[in-house]
Image (cartoon, helix red, strand yellow):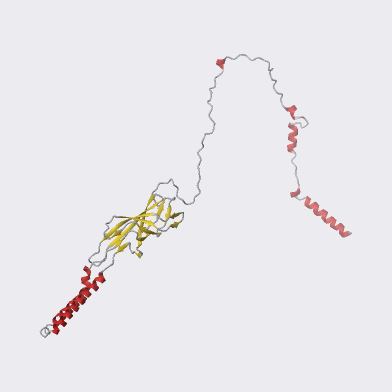
Length: 305
């Protein structure tokens, strides 16, 4: 029992101590209320403290006539038309799919963001509609038609597309053993009725690979070397036959070795000198008829608008 009283006493002392701390103390400022009571009577209604309203004149009182000249005239303001226009211009937005806008001018500027680019290195299998040979002059035109469609991003070049080409250089067989030469460049493509400039070369002609865009006739140099050796050998065989006939005659047996010796000399001269003599041996002609298959390869990007 003493223990419980002791606890109650301790708790009460702690509570009293905590309540006496400054943080829990409340100090009320009553000076404001005193000032309000001095200046205002809180028991009096607010309406009684308001000033009286001014009296209104009788509505039946006749106002004196005022001459019209004394009243200023207010200029009339014209009414503005607020009716909405009959047609409101509208702006249409198309989804950016990378396709070219049809209203753009057809130019070859490579920095136009609306152009469809066909990258360099793209190849087209085409068939010629024009015969060409080493007799063709530089500047002569050619026409090709594609045989297979070529599909790229945003565009497909269908089969039957027309390509234009030009003969850049040509010459006939030369006496140094070189054959005829034709250099063809593809410079235009006609797509959907529009002509686009292009830079392309021929990589195949007639099923054969073309290097450096040079379509050449057969080089006849080594054929000329063999021909010169054959000439010496043929002459030697003739002299051998002549010597044999002379040897059958008792009188001619004395001079029978002379033709053989001559044949040996001529054969040796042709054998040793054939590389030099073949320089003046002309090469073969080159001729590509209409309907020949070609392969065109782009050397630079092609832009379609």
